[in-house]
Image (tube, helix red, strand yellow):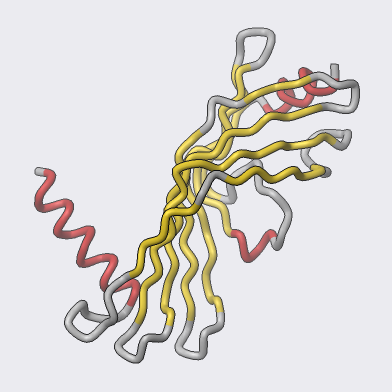
Length: 166
């Protein structure tokens, strides 16, 4: 059962990229070192909090057409976060695997930028979990960090905010 699915998935990737492997420059894969980003987050809870995000096991794969023009970029990575509330309350998520994809038109303009996977999985002090998973449209959000999916679901955001604001 896995072999037909893998074959189908490979054809789907080729269809999205819009080229055949016979005419395209081979993809280029790069391993990116662990990176840490710090963001001030507004608009999720009724207060501002800090997100210290560490990204590990990051792989970038660039895809090209027959003229060596960049057509798409795939990112695969594992992300973990530490959140610090205004009173110093701290929460740490379980981390999660995430996939992101950028697609470019023939002029090199980005026409799609989305990610999918586990966005957040944060154990809370009361034994519950704040969880968000699905697909996020990065073009629609600009540079703002994304904590809730555009498609998919989340649960217990109120609990997350209550624990972080304590």
